[in-house]
Image (cartoon, rainbow, N blue to C red; front, side, top):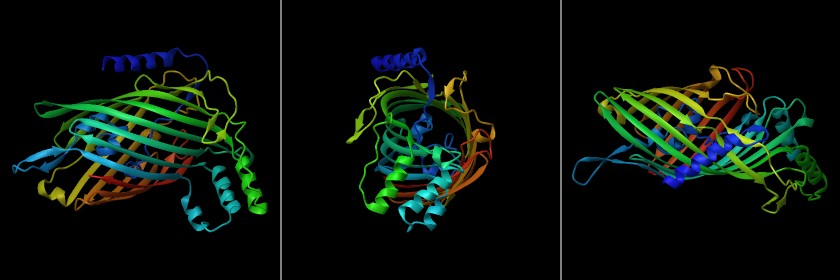
Length: 398
């Protein structure tokens, strides 16, 4: 344990001493429909698998389970497999043109990129959360096409992050309140391919569609990198009557990824970049949250309501992190609500960055299906650059 803590401290210190430019690295994020449908607010109300990337103090939450002696015990949640996908953009345009030719689909993509940008993701994971412990593995693949003024300037960023989460939470009973303190460690391995010129793809598709030439896309002039990062998170929950007050710290001390050039991957050859002097930083963030979960006794089996909100404040004390834009108050405030009917059907809604969100959840014994439609603000203030999105998850958990 001491060796692990020493390694984490060395990584944090090395991140602050590295020369070169500092670039923004997006947080390791799981696009959960359960979370997105509730306005992205999932701190004080965090529980189960999704707590692994939101609040380590929630590892102490467990469901009641009848034992053989006629009493009641606690059990955690096991996620055998969770598979989900997400899309950022106007998905309804694609649904209308799903039978179109490839170049028509590309035309829709380019139109959306020049308006608000688009993105897509696929993720898979498994884990256990409950009785004070949280363990999990997650693999997240993201494709992002940032907004561009013209189609000639369209680029694509690709990333693939594999991460482990391991943490513990401990409760303390303090008279009329209960305090739960938790922490976790997140080692990650990330492959990053930034700034891919989308014209190479569009040209190839056009040629194949007309001549069936079979030409491959040339990646030899594209820089790719791969590296590790280790993040540390902490959280505290205070339970008072039907309220939960939460404080979490994510990526404590800033999380730095130690990248090295990646010259080939799966038969694809990239540029021969010899060295990477730049630093890639995920900023330290402080999150405040509150949740109201009224207890109705046996009635909770038929209707279970939770109303909650969260506010996130990145702790950035310098303005030399390229690619990071500070945001206004409303873009950092998330509000949400969930009502569970008959312990199996969940209806969710929220307010994120100035936009409403909605979704559903179905719990069919050991199978779960979750979906969400939402809008995210990718600009600096509410209404600047809204981006519509959707997510769908299928999971085996019990």
